[in-house]
Length: 368
Image (cartoon, rainbow, N blue to C red; front, side, top):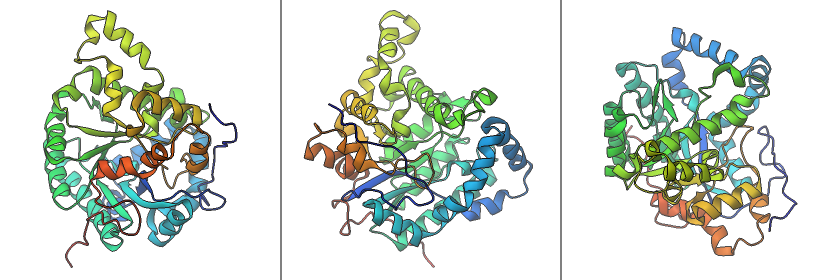
């Protein structure tokens, strides 16, 4: 039974105010910005094109509001003391930092892409090394150059990163494209966690009203990405692959019956070796779903072991009232609640200690 007291929403400008605390939460969905990467691309024509695309695809009203909010969330992308204070107020012991998706820059050639990845990952190393009990990191990789991305992933894992963040699509290629096989192989080889987070939508201007580009567009992109990874057999070919899907995995966990039906009746839907729904128990999903009914269903279809905390810090579409969200599931046992809040992430990330002050994520400061 679902309790009715949950109310979503906590303004990004002050996520700490009035937000209920958790104990020892490990947050796998939170972003940080690398100013050094912004400096590398400043003035590039591709960045001007990106700004124009944002206006067209977000819509004027949404883009204007995003710009107005920037002074409230930008410091939280950059200032570590502010971030730590917010974490303490929210009851988050450890954040798994990932680059802001606006810094994917998949248009970059190999040389620029390698430099962009280098400065982003150095920024992550510095932050994690200065606060080793509070932060781990998902690295940036230049997935538009799959062999290079595989090399970057191996290097990052050797330094103590826990995996990498990638988008749901790379230019005109879906993640199931054969060119990405070297990257998936490297992810399995190194034990990397791959955090899949969309940027925008492939539906273009059709969703440029009411912030639908994010409201339904981004979850749809995750749904497409996961579906193609399943139906194409990528997860069969790389059975040890560890994927965390942002925003609760989009719509796939809520509408898997149609995928299973297609697998049963359509020959072209049999690219995977099992029913599509069986792969839900092999993917991890974050809690950025904003409704207890959705979270309860996610736990029911994927298993409680596959659900991990996410906040989408520091953005306004994040979920900062996770305690209320979990409290609205009165049938969730204490052990299952602990699994969602920190034990699943602890096991997935290979953290030796329970989340908290004694945990030692492992990234060290880069040499002086």
